Image (cartoon, rainbow over all chains, first blue to last red; front, side, top):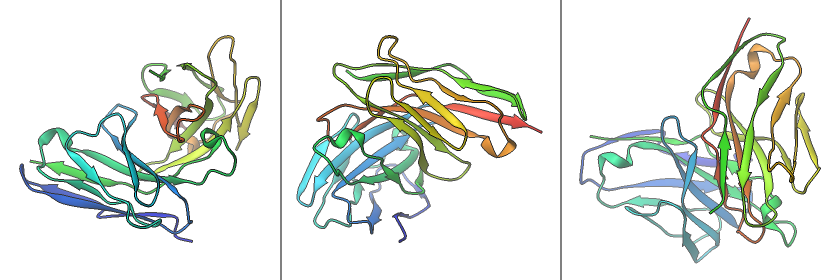
Length: 117
Length: 113
């Protein structure tokens, strides 16, 4: 299994451009997440999904959009890139095996480094 | 809201030294607690976890005990190696919270030979 894969690994955007960060998992996990990691800070949740067709906002959703048309894929869309979106973006997934999903391990992709100039 | 606080600053220590990284949390319910590790250039991976009070998580010589009375989940290792150099994140996940994680800021650990 490849686990969680993300593309691209690195991207430079100009202010106002748009792009989609791709995330795919092959573990049949129904829960998926997008986080951003700023220097010297922990990860902040952008959006998450508990299954195909279901998405919800996290802590820092402004400037981003997501969709979940399949179990495997959870792309993150930046419509109008701003310097404040310069960050490292991590996708993660998990699979609840009991009624309490809080106990589950999240599996992270390698990240996408984005620089907005 | 839920939050996690980790001790400030990087940690630099010599090989075979004892490592402690402090983590305290604020939560309204009964969260699960995690330590994730990030090696250079990689994504995060689970190091250990504890899902209820007084549970001890352990892995690769690392340990942490879920202390509800002090709302803490401190990470310890008795004898570190150069290969333990990484960033360590404490995190919590609230019951019925869809497994959303709240992270601390992380601690850079550098082990010198």
